[in-house]
Length: 145
Image 1 (cartoon, rainbow, N blue to C red):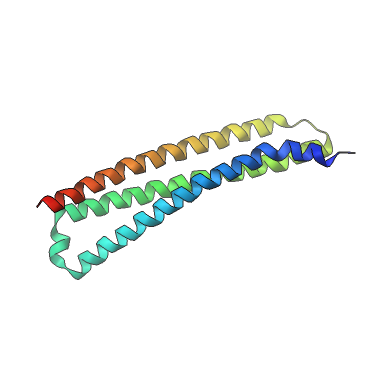
Image 2 (cartoon, rainbow, N blue to C red):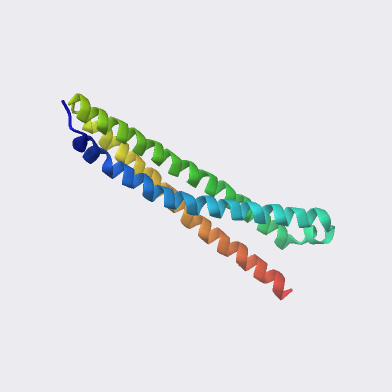
């Protein structure tokens, strides 16, 4: 027979990991929504005023925003893959305690995979920050003209 405290102890770390990933995911989704809204706004302005659309800077901004949206889409996907990995770790750890079998190698592999997913998503977020600064420089150039 197993005790509930043993199961709870085995699944605590992946649960905390999911909470941390949730905060990063919230930030990524907010950045994605902001980039998507700005892209739609710029495209809408281009459709209303042909003169604005002819400006090369606006096209550059839209291109950068599209790159950002794609980066953030993959960032969100990697974060969600990490959540799935952590969820399987929770199930595996509970099953291991309940059935008293040693399948820790599987949980260890999933944990490492989840960490790789988090690292990749953070690199994508950092790239998004650099791209947003590049778009801001283009917008600043518009003011100087």
